[in-house]
Image (cartoon, rainbow, N blue to C red; front, side):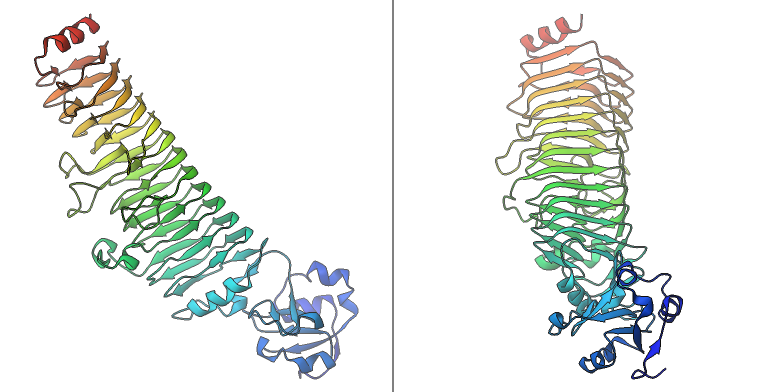
Length: 479
């Protein structure tokens, strides 16, 4: 059919012409089935001249086609996907990313994603139907709200920045998509001297409220997977992460030693994480943290990164934190200061406090380390299997260790080091078959309550420094 020929096209004919199952609701309401329409092949033919033939045009292109109605008030708008010089696409539901020229066949869709990002407005839902290659950032939005990114597709990136970024946005949802990079080994491919590359991110929420990531798959991102910087109420749930180059989920964007702004509301629930260069979760100076029901596998698996890092859950300066129902598994090739499942400590003068670690399972890792005057920490009802050091504390203030089961490994509870050790309670723990000691108490543990613990099979059941006052306290509490 020639583009300048008028034809009487009714409902089913219009639908078939552009591969649509139904006529958009807006058109039905306007009596579209009785209108005269022009049919063209591509969106490039949506010119100003067409309005003289009809104010309704059907574009037949499979990827970018649809039904368009002319709006003279938008004649100077061309956003590359939903409006072409006054021709306004008629649709219900999500925006198809392919309307903007994004294609799985292209080697790089960066410019097309930029066009898409500029067209998105508050309230939009964007659908990614295929896996699209992108050499740089894909979706980048600012000052918008009620945005949803969904689909059975996603992004394959050779990025040097972030894959998606949301700045000062509200109510953002990213779900049911895949984000990956082309790098086979992110631990070796990244350059730690290149700050921009080192801090490459998957999805960054900067200053956002109520951000949600659900049911996504992310792999081989050189830096932070999900970042919530200076934000409120960010959740990551039911997702899968594999071979991440930096933190899987973090509250700091750059991790360069500067004080990050305070974030509140940080939820990481029911996720699976396999292999991270640094931490699975890093909550720098964050309040109201909930880490529940995750499987964190292979803590500290990079052989070049086994000494001072390789944490599972890093709680630096975090407060009001609940960590429960998680399973954290390592590979037991680290020394006594690396491959730490949970690390609770202060950060740049901010105290880690009000932290509850309960009902978790640890295997083949260094278990829980509490340091640097962290305060009001409860460690209870956890299970440790073959952990080199199950629980290690130094310089803490008000710590309760109770009802934990420790099987194997080298040390059960190590409270030997540290100059500021205040009010440590160690009660009702079961410690079996540790090779070095069950409980070690150093010279500065002067306010310790030690009672009703069961220790069996260790080379040294309870070690202490020989301080008579401390010894009396120990044995008195164990009567």
